Length: 193
Ligand code: 5GP
Image 1 (cartoon, rainbow, N blue to C red):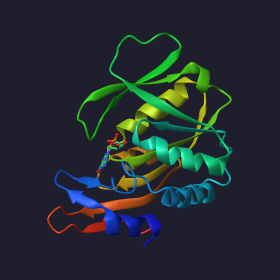
Image 2: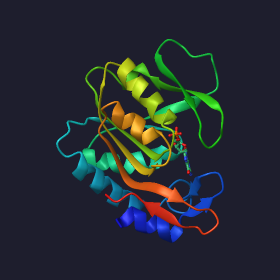
Image 3: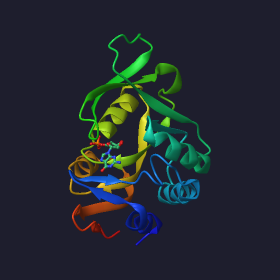
Image 4: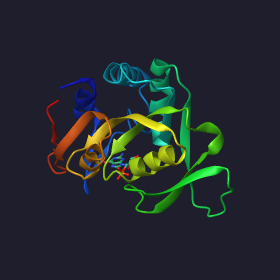
């Protein structure tokens, strides 16, 4: 088991409905030492990539992305979630369905902060069905920028997102891939890496 898998076993809580709660160290209270280990590991996995920008989505991607960004010496841009349809022309917009909140959001990024000269590493806390990632990828492509890689903390391998994104040819690296989990026993199986 790697450092993140060990932490998930120690502090993660399996909820009904295929939800893994990791809010004591990842997406509510945040363990910055752990995020630093994640940053080092992503830097190792993407060391040959020319990355000059990190893109994530609010809210829970932001903390991880900020720490990861130190290892790439790159600024972080986060996509904002907006329910408003009143968006001015200087924004890239994509539609995203939320796995946890079961609603549709538009996500927006200002055209000022992403463009054709950007080589982007997308970072997020979870990958489930891949809706959040599809939205972020669509913003990068609309901007004429390049997706150099995608770094995820926890992928739920039994949902479809990971397969779909890899089939599209993206270099997707997940630090922990959960193959199965049981809310009754609390047991979690990881994909061997
Ligand atoms: P997707 O768009 O891939 O279906 O879901 C990704 C988003 O849903 C993540 O940004 C994360 O916020 C949330 N999410 C999906 N599954 C889980 C889960 O099991 N636990 C938690 N805490 N968040 C999840």
